[in-house]
Length: 120
Image (cartoon, rainbow, N blue to C red):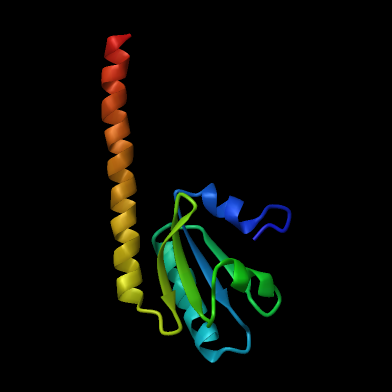
């Protein structure tokens, strides 16, 4: 995470992104972090991580009451949340669903732009 730019702005700049909030003294957090990193890499998603002990205001900002928490953002809006015991199968399905929706929207825009070009 870049300190000079608020996390909300960074998330808003990505069509799809993951945010992982955790604490270093949480054994589940430590165990899940490599899995989240691998998932983000496999799905080619940006991953932002926040240590809520070091940045407690982030927990408040994202309404996090327990850790770990992984949030999926689409165009800067939270669209999926997994907390405490992360269901990686469900998370992966949600990522694929949103990737497909974004791809369809891009294709639709491209298709419509063909007609816009013809009208000119």
